[in-house]
Image (cartoon, rainbow, N blue to C red; front, side, top):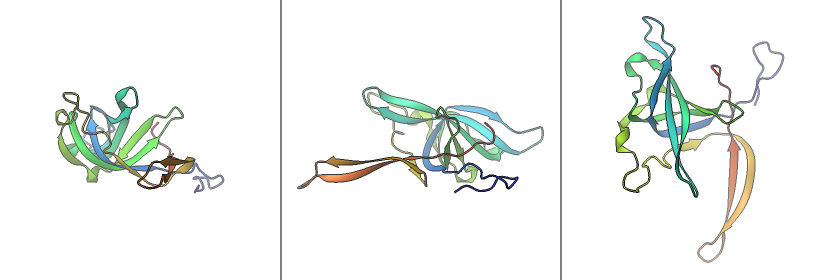
Length: 167
C-alpha cells in the first residue's frame, strides 16, 4: 500500500481515497490559482453534503471542493452540478476536501430547485454515491426482522485517507 517517497528511503503514507459521484450544490466560489493571462488553474468552492441526524433533522456538512480546469468553464455559485471525484479527509479533526474531475461535471439546475419546501426534505439527501477501497475501522453484525426468519447483515465502516499537498 505504501510506496517510497521521493528520496526513496522511507515509505510514504498509504492512500485510501473515497470516490464520490453525485449532485453538489455550489454555495460559494472561492479562490483560484490563476495568474495574469493564465487560462487553467485550481479553482476552489464551498459546498455541503446534506444529511439527516436522528433527533436533530437535516444538517448541511460543509465541504471544500476543488477542481483543476479552465476559467471558461469554472463552476458558479447557486448551481447544482453532478460531479465525480474523490473525497479526502485532510485534517485529524475530520475536515474533508472533495477533488473533482473537471471534465466529468454536468449542470443539473439552480440551487433553488433543490431546497427544502413545505416540510419536505431536501432533494439532495442520500444522492451521493461512495465507492472505493478503505481501511476497515469496524464491523458489526446486525440482525433485523425478516419475512419468515431474521435477516443478518454485516455493517462495515471504512476509513478513507489521503494527503492534500495544498493544506
